[in-house]
Amino acid sequence: DAGITQSPRHKVTETGTPVTLRCHQTENHRYMYWYRQDPGHGLRLIHYSYGVKDTDKGEVSDGYSVSRSKTEDFLLTLESATSSQTSVYFCAIGGEQGAPYGYTFGSGTRLTVV
Amino acid sequence: GENVEQHPSTLSVQEGDSAVIKCTYSDSASNYFPWYKQELGKRPQLIIDIRSNVGEKKDQRIAVTLNKTAKHFSLHITETQPEDSAVYFCAASIGGYQKVTFGIGTKLQVIP
Image (tube, rainbow over all chains, first blue to last red; front, side, top):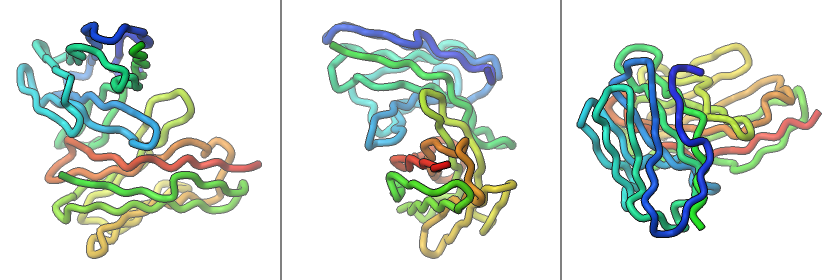
């Protein structure tokens, strides 16, 4: 749907292990984003990318890193997972200068850290 | 950075009534204000957006208004239907359409 897919859809991992989430788009968008969604906090930006190998931090970037080696793929890595990183993670594309201006979100990854 | 406050956090209305969700933003440089709807278990989807050079925008039963002086914007849904039940997020961005900051969301329940 809408040319953006996330994998995996669900994951359970243990505290202290590294975890990588993948976002893949077929829309050739320049901008890609990772958000996390938690009750009472809405959607908060973790990292974003404005081109291949061009990334920057969002408001909740501690404990996360990203990479973008190709236009279509944006990876989010939890370097050493903690229980506070249990969340639903959404990738998004969009924010281009031409209409439509809004984001298209992926289906989300539900991550549980035990 | 930008801060977006949204209220109410929950809203219940009778089918056919109107619903209003209000948001305020902190940075006067914000110039793009989208609204997203998220149904249970689904991804957020853009339903309407407004840019700072426009005071009001309508699309069928939904409308957004923007008051730049007061730094607040609102979503209005008229003739609500059960399928309008969802969580609605307001958002704002500074200087373009990237790096959007979201409000905490409003859970709207339309009672048949």
